[in-house]
Image 1 (cartoon, helix red, strand yellow):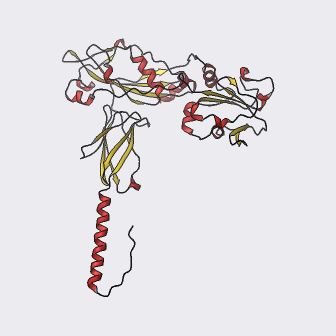
Image 2 (cartoon, rainbow, N blue to C red):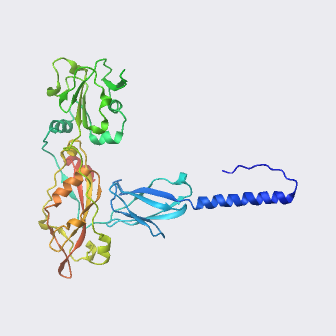
Image 3 (tube, rainbow, N blue to C red):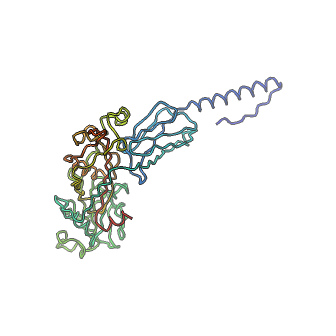
Amino acid sequence: MIRPVLICFGERRTQWRVVTFVGVALLWVASVRAQEILLLSGIVSDSVGVPIVGARVSISGKGSTVTTDDRGEFRLVGVSPGVMELDARRLGFVPIKRVIRIFTKESLNRFQLIMAPLPRTLSPVLVQANHVEYRGRLAGYYQRMQRRSGGYFVSRDEIDRKSFQTLSHLLTSVPGINAFTLRSGGGTVRMRGMGCRPMVWLDGVPMPAGEVDLDAFPASTLHGIELYLGSTATPAEFVTNDGNSSCGTILLWSRGRDTDPPAQARATKVDLDSLLESLQVFSADQVEKPADVAGRRPLDVTYPPELFAAGVGGGVLVEFVVDTSGRIEADTYSIVSSSNPLFSQAVNRALQSVMYTPATKNGRPVRQAVQQPFSFVPGFHKAAQVSK
């Protein structure tokens, strides 16, 4: 900012020179600001907020185009201030344009572009489960979470969303839990206003007697938490004979290879848009008979146990090319959008052995680009809600 300065001169000519100098300085500052280069970033998602992978984002009239990553995020480098039009395109979605105004770094915010899906020839595959068989070290945890009897449960999804710096403060989000600071500098909790310490178990093993510093366990290392406010509600296998369970019980379940979500499927190795433009691959509206699952048998998709136990539903949209023999071309397969990586993994496994009836054009089988949606619903009662 240039602050006005009062200068007195004896001659009008000198005053005119000062005014001219200040005017030139202001024009130079404005020119520098106009040439300022900014970074424009944002996210592309569908109507329910699920990120869209592989969307092409550009500024109308400019040559540079970027593609959204696995999180649906994009970054446009070298953006000059002014009024511009953002353009987003993705196969299977309605193209959108959005006018934005950027004049300073202060007006540069993280922009969100919402794309609506186009009507699809393939109806969503409904993955609906009423019972899941739990196995492994977390089987009991999932069973108790599903029943929701007598305890409070904090799932991995909640742990990641709440992003508390310490475990003791994370636990205070549960009714009846109060956090306290230890003399050593750590943290612990008390249940229902009791003055005694609760029992703490880690992966089914009781912690040593004495006060447990809960903040020594980073929340980011935990897959799930169970809290029981008294001995009557605590599962029998976690009730101790010394009576300490009456002060409450905390069961901590750590993350590991058996809990870590798989990496999202990589983007396609080929450019489907180019294949469609060159008519090497056709879309559903360009063929006489679109590709479809052979025999119309239900796809065998396994509901992820941890998501079923937590009552979590969601959806996945995959994209691939069905060749002239009815097989999925592996190098064209990708996840367009997914509400959870575990759902993506379940879909990936199910499609590895699926055969399609190839699309036909002019009486001959042709390659077709397919987008197959999957909808996960944990139980009939929730299915009724989704269908409304």
